[in-house]
Structure formats: structure tokens, C-alpha cells
Length: 101
Image (cartoon, rainbow, N blue to C red; front, side):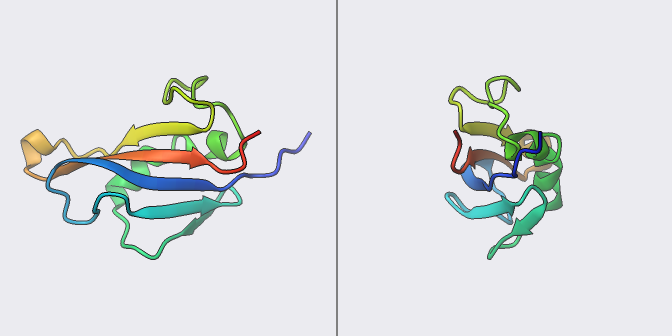
């Protein structure tokens, strides 16, 4: 059975330290399971943290099954920048599965 891909809304939920790219509450999307849509600059480090999960989430897998969320339509991941060592910023993203059934 083919499951149509859901849109993932990815919001900057928290920033520890100073991220030179993101600001709180900025949003970008993954549509149709593979189309990255954004009006903001994106950081490659952050995309690396989303990559292991975006296919499962876009196919409607419950984030609780992946141990990355406590609600059925919201997941949380953080970028790979260890801000305590780099003086950069560690960003936490809230990933919402839109039209989750």
C-alpha cells in the first residue's frame, strides 16, 4: 500500500548559544516527502539532523515510535553544532506532521 507523503512543518523551537543562521520561530517545510521549501537561509548542519527522520515522518510514522516526540504529530531534533565547544548555537527543531491522521 502506498502512503501519500505528508508535509512536514519545521520550526526553530529553541536556540542554545548563538546561531548565525536561524532565529526563533522561523519555519521551513519538506513537502511531498522530498521537496525542501524555504524563504529563509538553511544550515547544512541542521539538515543533517533532520535527514534520518524526514522520510518516516512524511509517511505518517508516529514520532513516539521513533523516540523523538511525545505527541503523535510532533517530533524534536537538534542540529549537530555542539555550541559549548564551538561558541556557535545548537538549534532544536519542532517538526509537525501536517494533516496527521
